[in-house]
Length: 316
Length: 275
Image 1 (tube, chains in turn purple, red):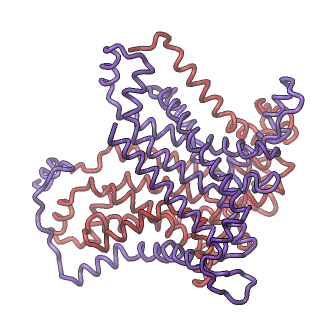
Image 2 (spheres, chains in turn yellow, purple; image 1 turned 45 degrees about the vertical axis):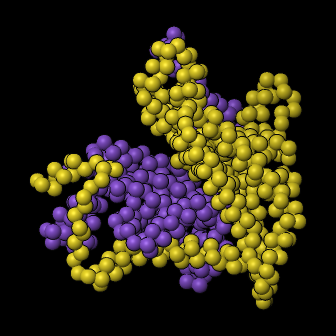
Image 3 (tube, one colour; image 1 turned 90 degrees about the horizontal axis):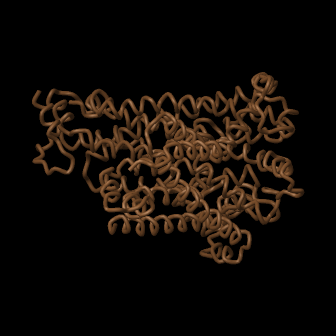
């Protein structure tokens, strides 16, 4: 079969002399092609994502609220108010702390566990599944499980009491600790993702390189830092960007585990505050300004991180 | 270079994996324990195991489990089927066309990959209200399709690069229409991409909490995850019942994931461009 042979010789990236495309029909066929293949998906995407984004920017310049009979254009006033809104500023601080923890901890533990599990055999296959399981389970379920485990009379504190700690910490009820407990839960759930991505990256590290380094007298630590870690750069990029975006928009865990408490807003993330403002207080104009700030922060953070890490990939 | 202590790695791996697994272990054993056993030793095995918790959830008079299971199955299956069809066609179109507007659509879709739902939910409720679809199943499905179409397109158009253009040209010469070419020749070759789109979107949509909470609302009923959230108060003193409900809510998606994962791996090893 003639077509078959050309396919087998096809190499990606190889410059091909391409046969001029035959277009049955003329311009009408092209339009029909667009309408049948591209239009449905594009239209739904525009109505449910592009239009709402545009509307969010528009609303953020108004004083729209459910109980206000008339909506006025207020310019940038919402944004000025945001700068003095302690609830919002607090939520930015909370989200920043949580994001830092969730970007760093699963990355560090993930690469260590991936190196540990980078072997063949049923044991390592089974353990890979164990680490990945929380990714398939709903964050609502994960949150309820951990709420029970970290409860003041839960298993962890029972164990601590049995070990002789008379007053174990209130993991979720102490305002000083709750945010860190919450972050740890998110780290636990995201860890499996990092492990899987790093394991995939390790598959691409040629065995010969490590062996060559070993022959040259490099110890295990040296081999890791000089050979393996640089080759894991693309995996680090993926993990960091995904963790960054998931952590910054965190909502489910906060809503189910602490609902922003204990105390006032000690664990209230930006997403929680926006939805509170928009759907409970019904101040949709103001909430939209908060949403726009969130979108800009996420976009800037992920673009900068992507640039920095990709530049690093090239240099290495 | 082999390690000098051959049993060290499996031992460390086993311990680390074991510690990581403890929360899931606690959740799992509590499904089969009576509530008073749950309150005492949390780590002990459920001996003898009881199925009362599962039976209580399955036969509860408000049939919360069954009604929300029905909603979740409907929303998830409709969403992922529509998403697969639409994003496969759109991904194919964008990968094969090289016009300025197809590039603009592609860039706009890629931007959509990182937009958090919180940013657009307020206007979305108003768009859905205008369409008369707020607090309906169709509204939630429509939102899922719009919100996740970038991911589907991203996967399918990426995979299209490995499908030789010559196949489609050969089919066109043989007189096949674009529609026939796509569904009979291209789409079957995209099986690994289809499997991964179904896996990811199935898991995300099934496990979704925020969007059904806002869009579907409590009035018309709940999906399985918003149902769990709603019944947290009801099960506050009944840990066994709570864990049984969560177990039953997770089981379908776990089975779906395991079944498709095999298909996914088979598709990868089968080779997509076996002439």
